[in-house]
Image 1 (cartoon, rainbow over the protein chains, first blue to last red):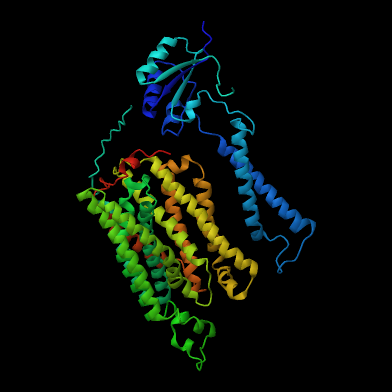
Image 2 (image 1 turned 60 degrees about the horizontal axis):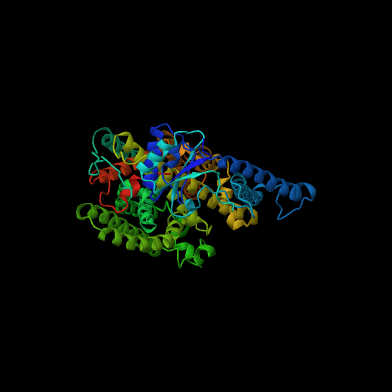
Length: 178
Length: 408
């Protein structure tokens, strides 16, 4: 038994990568993930990637922003020290709309960015986890879990048939720490 | 290296046949409209009739102008996604010259019968010796006078019409000649058109609608009207597109294109609310009588429920119904929301026009519904007739392939 953890098929062209996914799937080989330097239309549907849950986080942070913004206004303008401004009621709802709206947008945006960073382990000082360094440059990578798919020769030949310029056998998952 | 293998078996030369039920219904609607207007004039409700004619005439011209704006915007932003459905706004734009003439006739008729624009067209208002002398209106006379009004109307709508007509014509020419000539020419014309359109549409709406209540003014009014125009224009494109698809045409337009139109409908409904609220809140907050008079009239018992209903239909409904991604990709949902928004913006124009014309003698009945049906029929007849004259896809459009492979 080899120590190979992941087999990486490295393609120079996105169409070849899409072709490679088809070939692997036709042979019942499960794909761990794909890494590409740019978005490729239709790849999510092909790989069966679930829609991102980021909109749910966005909604929650937005709702939090609405609540906080409105509470701040209510506490300062209507509860703690009600003021008569231009003869308006001390709870002038139309006036509260812009500030509540802005705080909603602010928390929604910041919350989404924070969630995205948290989920992708992108913190200051953290080396990004990359399975193949050229996936951020000019190569399109298909990663296959070598423990799940034991017929390595078949994987190798399928990737090369599809047009992989290089097939790598990595003994560690991420190569970007050194 | 891989090759792009995109096979499409679409017939881009397919043409819509405007006949049968669609044609009969639109012609019957026109007859109903004429009957409603005739009934209104016969019963002596001249002001209410002209207010309704202005409402629908302006709505009609705005939707056609939005078609012209749509094609120009797609050209200038070099957008590819819309190439497959561009024939619909092109047909709307081609009808703009007729819509402009109709609006001009309505405005002239309204001034002649003293039913529209009577707050500033009466010459005694400008005579300091006369009992009717109105200092505020007299101060606006340099802008708000009858020759000036017509010069601006003819200049603006004439200019939009020429650009709309030429932009559509260039695309039809491209079908026969091919090449990039039409595209490059359209790009230049579109850029010029957008600058002219952007600066003049606010003034156009000041003249046509805001001057009905000549004492009142709002600098937001132009953008508020532009937002209404744009949302209703997109909604009309959506309705025509879905009905054509349901009839078996335009197989190359799919849920991705619908999704983009849905985003525009959703986003610009929010934009409409933003502008509406910006106008409302500043006036409410500063509480200056000459400004609040506008909302005071609209908060009288006969208008208040309609005033709030307009916000529910034009803001809350699209917000809640279209916020979900899947909703924007479903034909029936999009058709429902588009028709709802078209009704909503009729109501929006109703709230803008009626308190300044018929004031407290508000009505909602045969006259309102009949006029709206008549103009809808006229629009359907003219636009569908135009659509049937040309292929449903611009087959030599440089971005047509991008539109076919559009995915979001």
